[in-house]
Length: 206
Image 1 (cartoon, rainbow, N blue to C red):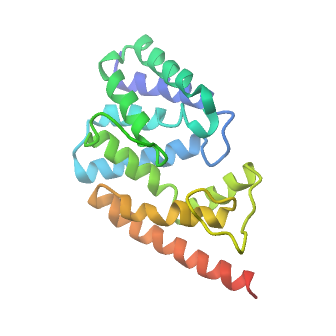
Image 2 (image 1 turned 30 degrees about the horizontal axis):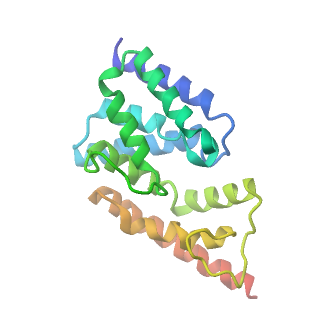
C-alpha cells in the first residue's frame, strides 16, 4: 500500500471517530493543524513527512476531553488501526507522539525531542491562538456551558469561564513553541489575543 492510500484511509478513520466532538475539535481542526504542520516541516525540514501526516491526522482520536476514562480504548483503537493497515513500523512512534502532544499531558515520557512531536505540538497550539483560537475557545465554552466571563474569578489553571481560559492556557502558548517557524507564526496570533481581550474588557466595563 502506498502512502497516498494510507493517508486516505486514515482520513476516513479520523472523520468517523470525530463525529461526537465539538466543532473546535472536528475534522476542520485536523485539517488546519495538518496545513500548519506541513508548512512548519517545509521550513524546518526535520521530520519524516509521512509519519508527521499520520500523527497529525490521529492526534485527537483519543482526546481525553471527550474520551474521559475510556482514553486507553482510544489508544487501543489507534494501535489496531495502524497494525491492520500496514503501518506497524510507525505505530509505536505515532502513539507515543499522540500521548505526549497534549497541553494537559502531565509527566510525558519517551523521546520528547522527536521532530514529529515538536511540530505537532507547535501546530496544535497555533490553532488554539489567533482569531481561530478565540472562536474555538468560545465554541468549546458554549459546548461545556461555561460562563463567558466571571469578573471576580482568579484564574488558577482551571477557570470556569472562557475568558479565564485565556489566562489558564492560551496566553501561555506563544512561549511554548519549539520551532523558529512556530514562534514566528505565534507572535502575530498572540498579539491578536491581547487585542481581543483589550476590546472585550472595554466593552464589558462600558
